[in-house]
Length: 282
Image (cartoon, rainbow, N blue to C red; front, side, top):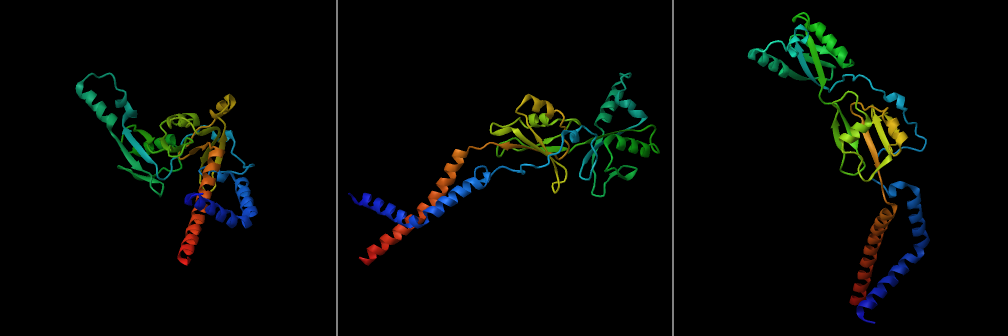
């Protein structure tokens, strides 16, 4: 037996002798770790809920008019004469056409501030948070009627968005909402669809105050689940989360390899120390 073989034999003898008193404890810890929680195998999974979590019902997701709130960025356009110049097609005069184009571009953006108001030309600060778009347009038309003949107001919210986690790490996207009645399926499509590692039967929609949110659970793996999903309309600031898949065997191997790597390093260090002591002692 050469020197290298003797070294390896001594190494494993030292390892065996050190671990022998702790074999039962090590086995117990390994088994308990694997059985105690799925977090060992899929630590990247977010939004975990308990088995009997009270998910919100689909009836709570019916389409509704968007309610303005502080932080919204509003696109504002104002016309007189009930917006006649928007659709004035009777004139072919070049100057008239240029005027129409100018009015079409005559839009401005305003921020709804923390006090629920926006600061508009002529009429000043108006509290608009808490109203939907139609009610706000009517409200502002009434205010501008003191200065314009039959004012016509057009509003659009520019920064409505949803966050989509499609099931793969690093693939999350922030999707702007252009359509008032966008379904969860449409939002997922805008994000590129479910990723290869996403679970179609475990999709969650998180809505409202994150301190006490509503959570909806969807199953898009079946035809019936796809049909039910059409009842779900997204709202601004929703979070759509597709749970990622995981492979237990691979995760076990990775975890075991990490543990063995640490133990082996400690044993090797101990072995080198013993060899050094034997050498200096000799």
